[in-house]
Length: 109
Image (cartoon, rainbow, N blue to C red; front, side):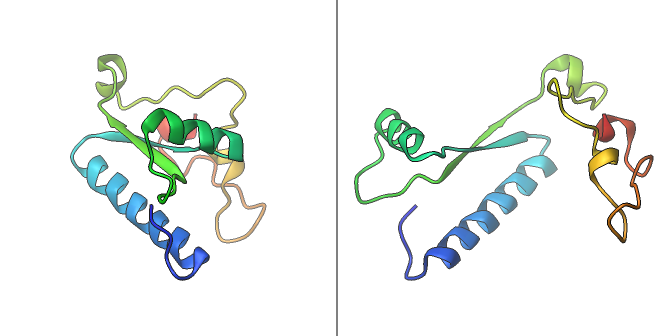
């Protein structure tokens, strides 16, 4: 990513581009995952591996791909160990009003 005149607007625009790429991919049945390279030593390492020129920035990357057959058929997504279900993290209208049961079972587990 090239630096724009205002750091915040550049990052904001990057987020919008990534969001739209991910939405377009999802519409075509392609999954995606954002990778952020913080802290600074990780950014430098990623730039080295990927051959990013010195006058460019590397703030994040997006991986695209298709789900494994066993998950694609059911649209089920395994939760990484230690993750809370969305229903315990997402609230409706006001903080503390649980969204439990408002999501499909695959998205809330």
